[in-house]
Image 1 (cartoon, rainbow, N blue to C red):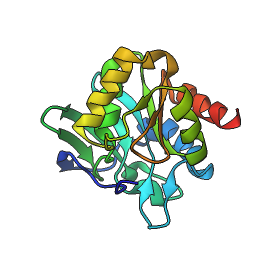
Image 2 (image 1 turned 30 degrees about the vertical axis):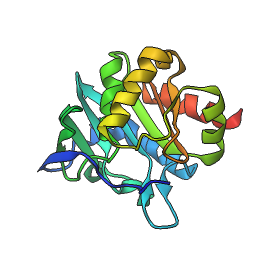
Image 3 (image 1 turned 90 degrees about the vertical axis):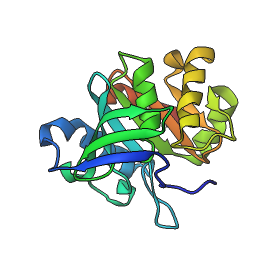
Image 4 (image 1 turned 180 degrees about the horizontal axis):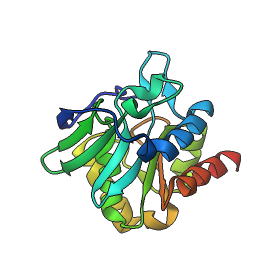
Length: 198
């Protein structure tokens, strides 16, 4: 497995007070469910995995911060607002009390491909990941998470693999890594939990 939790884009982070608590209410509810299910958390090396986001407005989104997988509960101080990004230049701008997740470019690309997409969830589950590799769209195994190449690979899945219909894909080069999305956190979260019960 490639190194986890490392930010690979150039981040322009403007440190600022915590985001409005009402903005992250639903995020916290779903993040708690995913943490309790072990889908977001921390691995044996103490590195956090998994992240969750919602569209804020147009191309801006709120995402759980870097390294927050180790916390059982998240507060407003654990979320960042991504205000701009450039995949080709591998740059991302965010504000908030914490730096945006290392997977932020992946989330950004998904929002870019669907104006009706309002929530993105990235989790780890080895058994489901292995099953999805056989049945659903997946990124190429030589593509690393959090890179411009991963963002462009997501574009390929939308264009060539009908990802907008599946709303779920495996990251072949990111052991256990799964991403799902939907019109709401409820839709994305329930899609994911339903896959786990199949």
